[in-house]
Length: 117
Length: 114
Image (cartoon, each protein chain N blue to C red):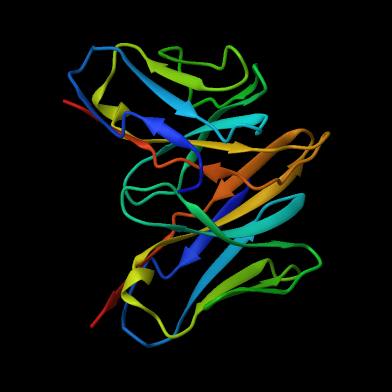
């Protein structure tokens, strides 16, 4: 257990429905990342926050995806009008970045596995 | 384009045997390289981290090496145990301003059998 929690752990939904996932990072961590991982592949970066500010979004993050971190603590990732291609594991990670630091260790949550029927 | 390639894609070994996993990367500017262990259905967990100046790092039965000149890394597992069965992912961090940009390999799926 890394200290990062995600909820739910599993989600099955029908195509066209909206889903929302939650991530609770390690409490003192200022950065929070979302990744998507499909079977047999490594995680792919989606977006990240420094405190409550969303600083970067991948081109993988279509306009059906939105992420928030309103108080700089927990974060939510919403997928609207889900498609079968959205089926994947959605991983959250958090880290403590000092200054402009890059390359700090990211601690991953257990992931939310989404299946879109 | 930053890339991380791992080999083999999968590996089956007998319990108690040693094995070595390989990682080649083209990531620039290089910050550090990590090996993660990912159990099925779980998030990745960091095993080792190495910066440019480090060429070996151990964590129990896991020993990682880094050759920054050839841009290669290896993860050696000694005296394997059934609990070592997992995916091992090589992750390279690029020093790109304020973003901790990670490039993930696709992983090596290790299965340790009796």
